[in-house]
Length: 295
Image: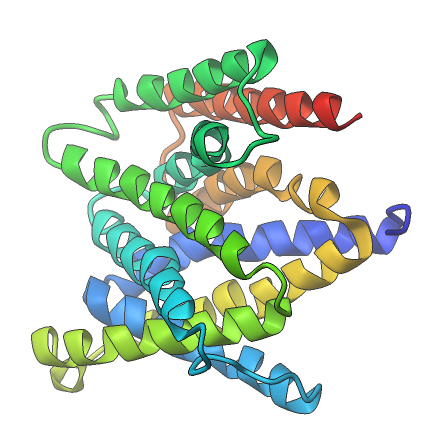
């Protein structure tokens, strides 16, 4: 690992922007496409650059090897379920709120890691971080202007979707000895295979007459927010390590709120700002706790 340079911080910021931009693009995609179609095409277009990189670098894709069931399980849990839940929920919830709700992922990861990873036990600082972070999420639900009886379920579905990212991440540890590009390509292939018949049978996307902006957002979601973002994440991990790459968690909700305001004119209430601060502080404490333990 090398000491982070200006280019590394630039790439980290770009990664945060790409991931944060997914939320308002999902919102735009929902204007024309159903959540199943968004999930499938996001996986399909996301797989293209990853498979291309594997081909150019002669990296073997093991989607149908003896470990196929791990790739299938991770593809279903880490891609199919959360992509669908987020796309379904964001139909009635502002994209900036979705960004904050999804920022709970590191907090959920800290809780689950306590039970499934031997060296990731919860301590006092981490407990405080989890409580502070989730208090921000709870406070966000008290904003009756943005979350009410009409979209409460949608907000919970997005929050629930973030949990599947964590579970998928834990399952990925089972195949951590394999190349990242191979793992990503393989789970994208399986995610696409699972989603294809479901999407075609239920939503029949060929009958749609989509808006141009929705289609552009859908392609962007796949190519950039899924495929290229994952490849960029691997590059940062390889050169700077997990601790440096994990800092992206602080930036995503901030950029998500800003981009939602700039592109969709979404309102930012005082409760949204306070919730955002609480969530970021919670993430900081959780990650600071892990760093202290490792030191």
